[in-house]
Amino acid sequence: MPKNPNDVVKDLKAGKFSPVYFLDGEEPYYIDLITKIIEETAIPEHERGFNQLVIYGKDANMGVVLNNARKFPMMAERQLVVVKEAQSLPDWGNEGIPELLIKYIENPLPSTILVFAYKYKKIDGKTSLGKALNKYAVYVRSEKVPDYKMNEWVELYIKGTGHQIDPKAAALLADSIGNNLEVMTNEIGKMLINFKEPTQITVDHISKYVGINKDYNNFELLKAIGFKNAYKANQIIQYFSQNPKNHPVIPLFSLIYFYFRQLALIHENKAQTNDQVASILKMNPFIAREYLAVSRNYNLGKIIEVFKHIREADLRYKGVESGSMSDAEILRDLVYKILH
Image 1 (cartoon, rainbow, N blue to C red):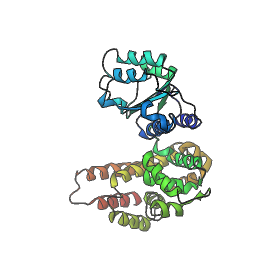
Image 2: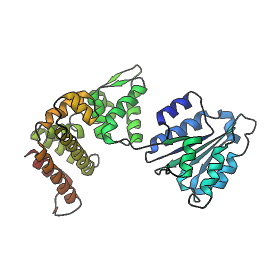
Image 3: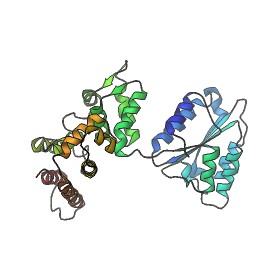
Image 4: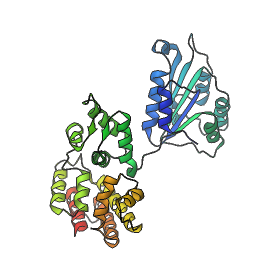
């Protein structure tokens, strides 16, 4: 079974290295993070000239990679060979290549650290290579974090930096930035450099340092829709229309759909308490309280209608029966139909 990326990061920061790392998956963040930590810490800086090699997949083949991995370090304890964009090695599909790699990882050179950064794809765990990676290598699968888990991810990430964050502030970041971990960590990093001491991050901090307007954002639009505050919803849509590049409608359609899918789950599971909602939706009870209240504004029949309206809005955005409607007008029409 693939290793947890955070556990691998912890081991690396403690100076625990292994002969072979294979990093795959659709989320590049952990692949890049683990590769960077290894590059910056495995080999002392003064030894890197002769003992640290970066190979790009499209410029090499498996034979070149393994020949370099079998070399001994020059006047050093070990060498590092990193294969970036490993998914682009041209001979992955050639007969005998998986077996060639398996033969190496079953008996790697102890003085070499070999890293494969295999982005946006996955090795089939049922193949002989997949089984060998699980058994003999440090095998990490970097999966996309589902949208519904991003609040928790943000809270844990910030906790790992020595700070804390209010649930509402975490939700604002998650709803506004989404599950692109590289963008998320960059924005959090720019914010945290302003705090010299451990800090409880609030919505005001997000507004000030990340630049997400605390009154006019995706989170507040969903809240306005949920509580049927038409005036507030239209204010936010008007704000979005003035900044269309920063507020594209397609991600908003997805957010609204997901929001009402969560409300549907509350009804389908007949949840009556905050704790029940938190358990069903896998969210902080503080946020669950709001979802429970909103669920009383939309019964299951209305939610099904909302899904229909979202599909219609999506088609209009794609040019089906849209006439000359702007993106903001399509969004405004969708929200009107949801609220009435």
